[in-house]
Image (cartoon, rainbow, N blue to C red; front, side, top):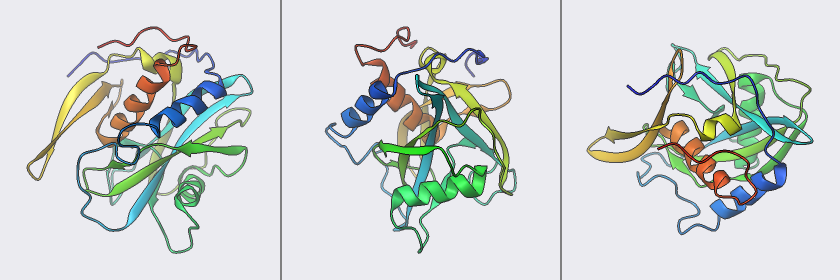
Length: 215
C-alpha cells in the first residue's frame, strides 16, 4: 500500500480550453477508441460520466461515487457515475446523462465536452467516458439507491498526488494501471486508469499551471 493522500480543500481552476484540448489530443492518439488492451466479453456497451465541477474560470473538481456495498457491480468501489446502455438511450452521451440523473440527481447546468477513449472494466464490459462541464453554484447531489456517497477531488492536486502503479489480473490477462490511496478507500481499477490517463494529457499542455507529475 502506498502513502495515503489527503486531498486539499483548495481547488484552483483549470481553464476549459485546456480541457477541450486534452480531449482532442486523446482522440488523435494511435488508438483513439481503446484505452485498455482487454477484450470485452459483453456485446452491450456502457458509458460513464466524468463530471467536472467548476465555474467560468475553469474546472476545479471531479466528481466520483462510492457504490453501495450491495450494488450488483463494483460494490463498495469508487467509480464514475455510469452504467449500461438502455433501449431508450439515443447515444452513449445520453446514457451518461441518464446515469447522472439516476445516481446523483444531476440534470441541469451541464455541457457535454467530448468523449475519451474506451476502457474495459474488470467485468470485461466496454465503456465510454463522457466528459461534462458542470457549473452549479456548488456541488449538490441526490443519491440513488445503489450509491453510498459522492465525493469531489481537486483536479490540480490530483496531478501531483502519490499515484502508484498497479497490475490487475483477470482470467489470465494483465493490465498495468494506477492506484491512489485515499483516507477511507482506494481509487483503483478502470476508474483510476481513465482518470490518470486524462490527467497526464492535461499536464502535457504548455499552459497547464500544475506542478510536474510524481512517479
